[in-house]
Every structure is written in C-alpha cells, then in structure tokens.
Image (cartoon, rainbow, N blue to C red; front, top):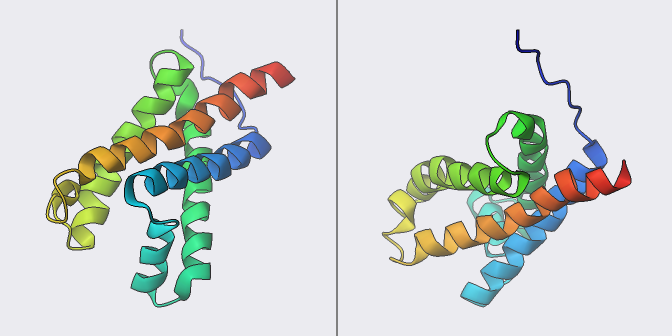
Length: 144
C-alpha cells in the first residue's frame, strides 16, 4: 500500500524562492526588452491602480506560485531541478499563453504582439524556476 507523502512546506524558503525567482524573471525580461518591471507596469495599468500595486501584485504572484510549487513538488516526476522546470513550463503554457496573453489581446502565446514572445515568456519563467529549485530543494536540504 502506497502512503501519502507528508512533506511539509518550508514557508520561509518558499517565499524567498518566490521573491528571488520573480527577480530573476525580471532580470531576464530586462535583458530581452530593455524595460524594467514591464509586467508590473502592465498589471498597474490594466487595474488602474498604478505601478506600486503592479509591483506588489507581480511579486505576490511569484510568491504564490512558489508556495504552490513547494506543495506539489513532492508529487511531481523526475529530479528536483526538472520538477521546477516542468512546473513553470506547464504554468507558462496553461496560464500565460492560453489565458493571460489572450485576455490582454495578445493572442495565444502572445504571437499577435511578436513572434518571439512565446520564447521570451518561456525563458523568463525558466529563470524563475531556478530559485524555486534551489531554495525549495538544494538550500532547504543543506539546512536540514
């Protein structure tokens, strides 16, 4: 009989992973676009609540996704580094390409705005995944 995995979320490391992952996402975005906090700007503009709210919303989303990842990571397949990459790839395709981009009028995967946008979007999310892997698995294990 298979037993349920009782791993607990290390909330501190999950929050740190979310913040540093979102920062990595923003750095890669800046490298590609030359614009800092472009996503935060879009959030602030679309909600009408300004840049401060956009930054708060953007980083809160990064933290929330990291906590979600920390909770389901033990159930995912493969080595931990691959689990983080698979999680963000699935999240990017399902929630960004097929939900957020069309909602913003950019079409599926953002291709109405630029043919390269799916690649940029995925690269940014893969950068986000590196701190997810490190803080939720490698760093956490070193501290145990």
